Length: 304
Image (cartoon, rainbow, N blue to C red; front, side, top):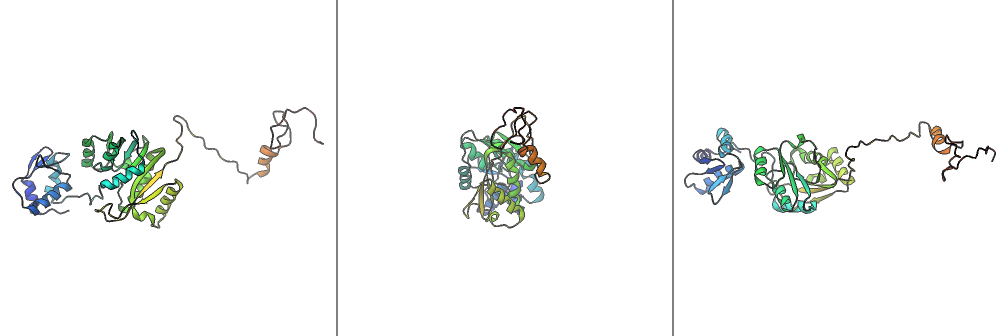
């Protein structure tokens, strides 16, 4: 977003003190609104009692790029759309949170979901790529752990009872993010995610495969109201995907059994395993398919 020169002049004249930025002088209303918009895009929040904009980082660092280039990269430019409160409540209701439930929020943004989940008694971990937003999450104090990283680079070191997320949408990233996040859900857990509404009718193979996975897991899709994300202006849905895989016991390795190939040598297999009418290696009578063999009596029963 290109910033007008008069807005830049106001910001250059501002008083900076750590995370605090104070505007000097009385600004004409329309000019103030444009200044406030620029500061908000940089992460500054107006504090009515301090009569200043407060950042989660040093204010000088927050506005340095803007003063240097005359442009600010907005949340919309980054594909970041904060989750409105009514939609957050719908997500948490579908997640069936209970106190003490361990929750992961990937792409946590400024914590709209994480903070509300913690308020319901959940223990929340967050992953956020943007450094300023990650620091905002740290400062909030409601997350047990905040990882400032690309979610796709985070290793699966812990599994959660719930993963609740509002992933990026651009370029159909929502499917990629949800598929990745499913690895972090423990068996018996749920993943609840906001996704693009076009998921329900797209005809590409990736979308079809993803929908088949939801059906196989007995998951559900819930359509959100048209105005759920006013800033986006597109249809959205909530996907609820149960994870039913059985987790391997700790310290044990599963052995994959290879089924016998009956078509390759059916007579040998049948004779060796099922229809052998000779004396067994343990000197018991042959199995008849219904009862266990009795001890062999040593007599020849060939003609009987």
